[in-house]
Length: 112
Length: 116
Image (cartoon, rainbow over the protein chains, first blue to last red):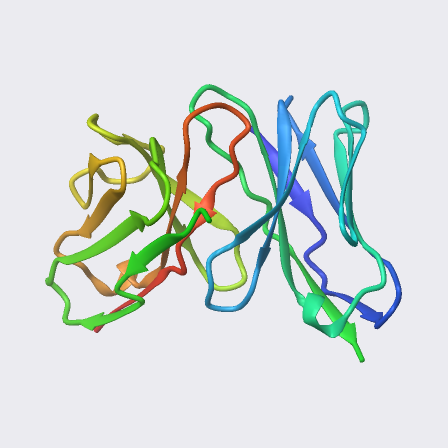
């Protein structure tokens, strides 16, 4: 069955550093991959979408890579801020139902 | 843009009660809506996919008669938890997406359901 793996341990970094989160998937060939941010008690918020033919996508301080050979996506936040502290979810997708399969998320803590 | 409103945000009720949760897309037409359930510190579990004007497609293991989904218009989908029991207590979240592939999902802020 399809499996999405994100590091379950929280990532704790100092403000100003670059945060890198990993998403690995197996038994799946997604046409695209999306990243979301979720704050406690709230619904996820869409951040970025990267297609299978794109190696890298950027949006302000965010950067996403997509390696279909390694079956992996990396999510980077540069110049991190305490306000970036949240849980980040990856979600590959691409079949005709438009369904996404969500990873369990990685919690990011940015220390001031 | 792309705002999804979910109501109510919190429900506490007695066992055996049926609870209706509404999900509205406020500024776009949602051809597809999704209903998820999320347990603490776990991922979103897709319960069903709902297309406007047609029956919902339920994921394996989700009881259709327990979780009734109606998607009567392009801006409204409802989830009714029938005869709720304590094990149905959870965080329920809806999302909506527009027409076409590669569309992001826009999420509501969820409903915390507590069955006593």
